[in-house]
Length: 150
Image (cartoon, rainbow, N blue to C red; front, top):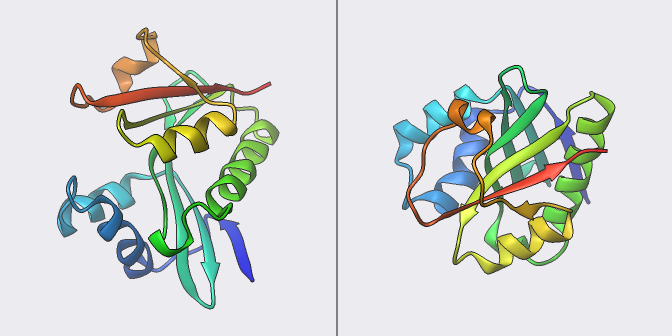
């Protein structure tokens, strides 16, 4: 059984063991650790005491929004609904906590991630709203996506 929880005292090694294989082309051990430590909110899915899904999030300044820094599901569990469950919990929590939107980046060629995010209600974002100035800048090959929370 997979349990999804928010902001418990997750062991850093659990997060690294999940995220490093998924994002190795963008992060080394040190930069991933810095990224994990920069998150204001961490959601994790655990199965048999092993982290199998994770979302690192941060506030977007004074705009009442959230930015998903990294979102990953263990490769062995991808396309089985875990990412959808994790996103639904995050969206429900965000609505309850009066956040107005959730923003993220994914790669243009990551079709499965784009499909997952669109299924959850995210839309491709091609303009550059003011709050983008407060976010990290990325290469040309990333696709910004936005979910307005109602």
